[in-house]
Length: 139
Length: 139
Image 1 (tube, each protein chain N blue to C red):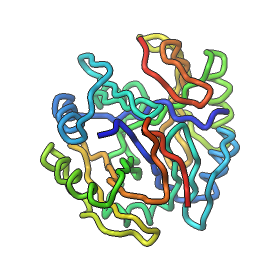
Image 2: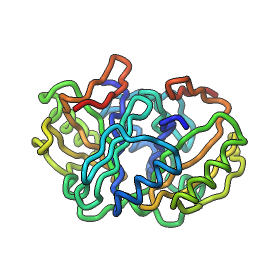
Image 3: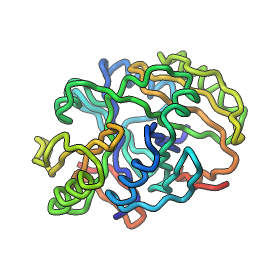
């Protein structure tokens, strides 16, 4: 079995608002757009934004809980963390935790997207990110 | 800004139970294990399982909502979908939706992991997956 995740699909209440957040906040460009769904080609997988109602119906879930998870976007230096977080808040995100240093090193903070999905913005000097955005574990 | 997701971190109530699900269900091997956290090297990003209490504390979130999201693992043929779903249920997962064909083609179903995190198991003939598990958009 490949150790592979193909898609992360986030349910959103307002697709225009979510597209603004990811387009203006992260600066990402969609690879596909339709009336209720948008895909971004990421580093070896897809990020999808889909109308929450349609996603829950597709999953056969009436309640969207649990949500104890976070996505992370790692950057190349400590100095890039807080400016990106500020940009995400300007684009409609909500600050969850200002950036500081975790016990394991590096620097990180958290911003929720307009639908409440959490993003950790982190500098982790132990993990490499190649030019294609592929992240490799290191300690 | 790289179109890049570095880590998906799932909060779990019982790390042993979660490791069993991912190890026996998907057949995945961790790259790092500590008392409260496990990492899997995936296709250009990390999958982390972390004690839910610690994750929520790290995120400064008291409530784990919202959870309107799903991860997906795509396989190479329609015939692989249902057997993998059965294996995931045997490993402690909960069936959300038996596999059938969505309007956009292919074949998919949903299983929740022991902590309720949703996984779509899908065959999507339009999207390519290379030998390294990197998924590319196609229509």
